[in-house]
Image 1: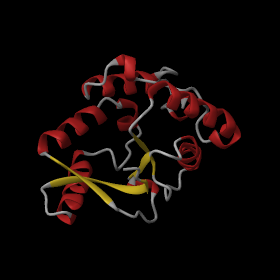
Image 2: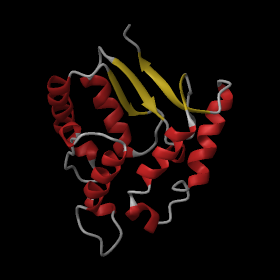
Image 3: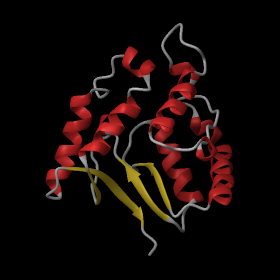
Image 4: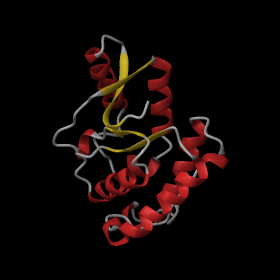
Length: 170
């Protein structure tokens, strides 16, 4: 996503920020994968994206797959949803919520989280300094906490994360 970073930033700033965020979440480097496709043009690379996801599937054999929601309007997220659904078609798959990219969102599955999870999520998001520089209105602590509270209220909990159910394999 080199084309979407603020002017004057290193070309690999998002990769650096991703790595910092994953470390803050406790993800080992051996579990991190970064693919290099141009931002807003994934549709030109659909087959390559599918091939990468199939290779990833074979490599990690996940129990659960998280993809952008099927109702996400961002063009790259739509490609990831479609190709991810194809690559992981026989596995449990949930679509995650990015409210700034949704006109609607069907919250069908909820994961109750605790305050320390919300705090850790905010800490990880703070690793994306380039996004703060762009002054994105959804990159605020109040927004992250507020959404977690809204989703929590929906399931009688203090905080929760909501997901669209794509497929569940029991």
